[in-house]
Length: 137
Image 1 (cartoon, rainbow, N blue to C red):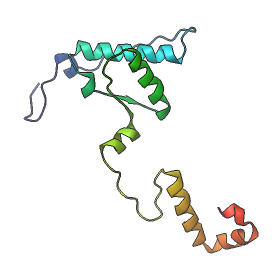
Image 2 (cartoon, rainbow, N blue to C red; image 1 turned 30 degrees about the vertical axis):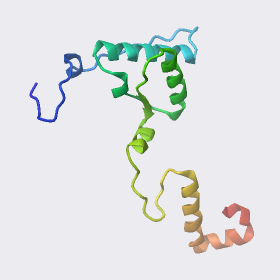
Image 3 (cartoon, rainbow, N blue to C red; image 1 turned 45 degrees about the vertical axis):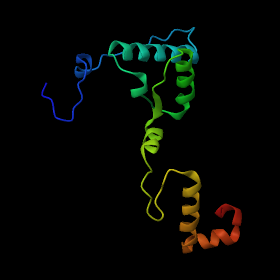
Image 4 (cartoon, helix red, strand yellow; image 1 turned 180 degrees about the horizontal axis):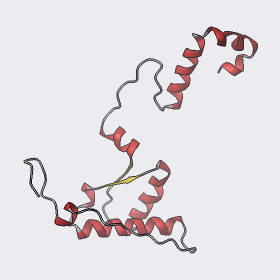
């Protein structure tokens, strides 16, 4: 495999296509047991590839998974990798660009203020605001 000047030396197992990891689910498994298995398997993979957990990122699909994953890693009594979602990792790496006026940001409070300002500028919404002020909040 050709090396570029900026490419780090990777173990051979990282150069190959990643192997599929199977986590069989049994009726007796609860959420904690599943996360314990994920943490053990990830720690084992890091050890097999001679990688430090402090340099790794465990990327999860949902914010609801952060706490159970972190609790499972704490049970291992080891250094934890960064356990993040794509959104939390992106926000930790730097500020997001400022949105343009009336652009959706994904932040409920800011988007509610932008929606209110947008509706105030619409003539068709004036009648609704006069009839029912609470509907316009």
